[in-house]
Structure formats: C-alpha cells, structure tokens
Length: 239
Image 1 (cartoon, rainbow, N blue to C red):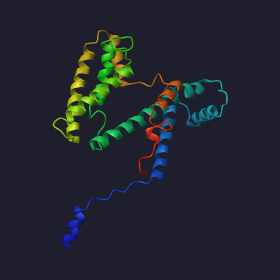
Image 2 (image 1 turned 180 degrees about the vertical axis):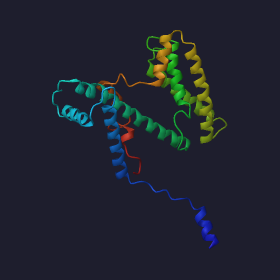
Image 3 (image 1 turned 90 degrees about the vertical axis):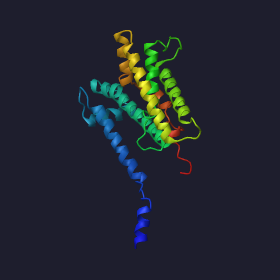
Image 4 (image 1 turned 60 degrees about the vertical axis):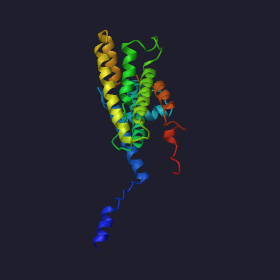
C-alpha cells in the first residue's frame, strides 16, 4: 500500500489538453465579439447591428450609403481593429517561440532584451538622425529591427560563453542586457534636442494605430506569418 502511494506521488501529473474544435470556436467567437466592440465603441457609439450591416454591404459590393456611419466603420475603425488583432496574433506567436526557446511559460520578448534593443534602435534613429535620410539611411522600422537583431545576437553570444547552452543563462543575459539598453534609451530621450523629437520618441514607444488603413493592413498581412503559406498557417511536423 505504501509503495503504491509513493508511485502515485512520484508519477507526473497528466495534463489534459482541451479539444481543439471547441477551443477554436470559443476563441473565434471571442475575437469577433472584441472586434465588434472595438468598432462600435468610440466617441460616436454605433449599434453592433449597424456595424455588421455596413460590413456585409461592403463585402457584397454594395455602394456605401450616405451618412457618417459607413465612413467611420469601414474607413476608420475597422482597419484599426483588424490591424490590432493582427499585431496581437504576431505578439502571441513571438511569445510562444520565446517560451519554447527558454523553456519557460512566462517568457516574453522583454525577457531576452529584444524589445529593449528594438526601442534603442528606433530612438537612435530619431534622436541621432540615423533614420531615413540620415547617416545610415534606415527608416524607423529598419532601425528597430537592426537593434532587435543585434541585441539577440549579443544575448546569444553571452549565454553561450564557456561552452554549452543553458536556458537560465540565456534569461539572465537577456535581463541584464535589456536593462542596460533601457537605461541608454532613457538617456537618449533626455538628450533629445527639442520637444518635437521627444514627442516623436514617446509616440513611437507607446505605439499607435491611428494611421491604419486598408492598404497598410494588406501590406502587414502579406508580411505576417499568418498569410497563406506562412509559418503560422503550417501544421507542426508530425501533426
């Protein structure tokens, strides 16, 4: 009896996976509800039924009706809501990759310093004039990507010092380097030459969807891993 209890205690607990079908339906319904609320709520409240009516007429090719609701829903709010959903899906995919890399379910890009490196690259492009037309000819997105890539390469190099690879060492290196880069970013913000530069830096760091439109949404989706044939739409090997 005692040995049986000991075996039960030492045996790993079984983790029951949720059924994929009902889970996908529930998440899809939650996404549609969130998108509807995002489009309907604002300085001008629009009933959800009218939101779906405008979307249905536009998708069927019907000409827009006179009034402001059609303009607000189709041209302003819907592209922003869809772009926010696409950005969130991308962040979720990145978070999953980082969690698998460091074998920690609480990991995120901030943990490895990648986000801090991207922020430093963008702030440097704004404050030091390294952006478009500057010394390196990089845009803000290019500077941010270069900063994130260089930071991850540095963290990986530090984590592999002494031979071998340990997830804990990778996490510690990412946290240390990320804190250093965050401090340097704050220093550059304080050294901004004028108020306009400071406003541009803070605006970029906080992020905004105010410039979203259908063309930008199409380009973002074409470059995302969730497009047809992208890595986010492919089944896992052996699935």
